[in-house]
Image (cartoon, rainbow, N blue to C red; front, side, top):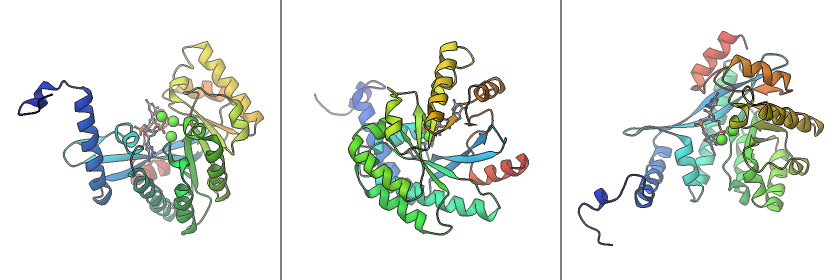
Length: 276
Ligand code: C2E
Ligand code: CA
Ligand code: CA
Ligand code: CA
């Protein structure tokens, strides 16, 4: 096909060519973002239903681009997974979580921070080195949790299992993210060194409307408890859901009903207003 002036107008919005160009652009700008302080982590609390207290926070990446504005993590993180960029991006996330951990501790807030890990990171032992590095620095161990989807863990089960064991050994418990979103075989949970399941938002948001979703959530919670795992419901947006999920046996909830993800200083203010 002839390429010349006007080609870009010939290419339709959302066409594969246009997508590819945009993806390349995002990846190029992301390299700059890493060195340029355009990235940050926002924190969303989880509430322990038995005590009503904050049981932890999830770190969610934010990218404020000088011209594009906010770029959603869903839009750029998956792109990095096919490239080498995923390594420095993960390293940045872990180091930033460590800085934020210190910042919160200095203000008297001692809650674990859950960091999301991309699928693909379990293919190489590099992730073990990165996690070991942050946990070897003050304030030491016991604050980092790792969220991984079941798909990430099932890609190469043998290799993943070895790496997961090493991560747990380092003191970083594994949480299964988006549980119930994929093919979700409950059987694999028994074989993996996981600590907690997070039931996917899409399932949770049907619990108050659809008896089958409620039954599935209840069954998943029960099964997880048999295995000694904890259960977090994500995407909780209403008081009704909050109560229902407690009745269904979930241990903790996370979602807009409690709070949106916030910059660390806003999280600290929020935490203090809550009285913990
Ligand atoms: P996720 O890990 O499943 O994170 C939950 C997403 O749901 C977040 O979107 C969060 O802001 C959103 N959320 C929380 N509560 C509610 C609610 O009540 N209702 C609704 N509708 N949404 C809610 P976000 O921050 O846009 O992140 C999207 C995805 O990007 C995450 O999904 C995760 O897969 C990925 N991600 C975010 N930060 C990182 C990171 O640092 N590293 C990696 N590898 N992935 C990340
Ligand atoms: Ca997550
Ligand atoms: Ca999730
Ligand atoms: Ca997700």
